[in-house]
Length: 408
Image 1: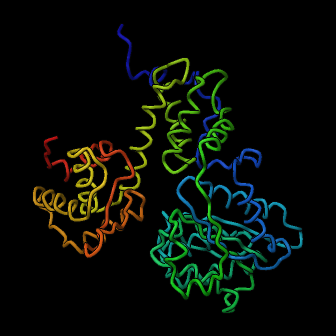
Image 2: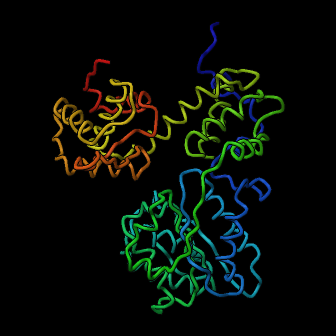
Image 3: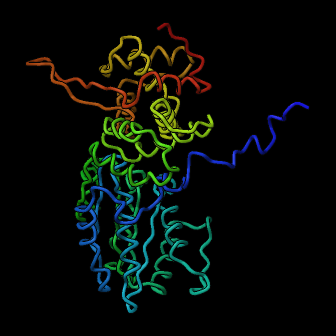
């Protein structure tokens, strides 16, 4: 009798020769302090800004910013958790984290805060998931906080993705406006280096926040980060060159620890899928490509067809000319041709510039002003942050863009 390829024992491999504890490779995993690498200064500084909470006083507001994968969210969660755990009995402290990539509107942020801080058994207050205005969710939050806590620390992760900065204003002024007696500290975390400078003057004045920049990790720090997650694998499974290669690839991408961990995890999964005895260099190189593709797909998942067409135009130019940098005008000409081919209403040059700015803000491309010399004016050069071939292949999976044809 032929083997059934869908036999659960064949389909789901329970015997894992590669991994010992996959949880250590989750980017959401908060390690012990001796596993947090290269962030002693940032931990100490953030703890200093928030430590007044332990006295029942108002913690300082902090803006934490730096490139993706530099430990911002990890350190913010770790420090706030330690403060909550070490609070004296007479001071009721709570901390929470809001993922602003998911809760983007003011109503969603206020709703999540009210529900997270609430305990209906203690407050007898019901906070519905949906159905109320932002104003009513804020009122419920103030009621919950007054009943339960003396101090609250709110981490707004990826705060730059909120549709409005009103939550920053409401939280930072809550006590001053008489909304609540609870003392609130806000930690606004952003992957955008210019985030502090983009805030409205009213928000800056209200927050009076301390700024805490996070520099990229270097290759040695990335290697140490991965070494401390080696326990995710069984003994002697990783060949000697695996961790250094993962670190080197991530160091090339602005010192992104998240990317290093992603590559290592993907490499292990590839080896597991092959039923290999070891994770080797070949797995790492393929994993790098898969990790980049996953990240690009996630970032562009909700992008408009116009934005995708602009990115495709830059990818095609890069592949056609075997170079990486192109002017706005060059990209627009190629975008215009793509739009015509797929019957997409082409944007004006002015609106297209805005599209490119948005993609640069998301970290999908890098833009730089260039001076054309005396009397020559200024132009802007753009380049993709990911491999053009990968960007091209991923975008061509889009049903609308797949109608395009290119000769290169």
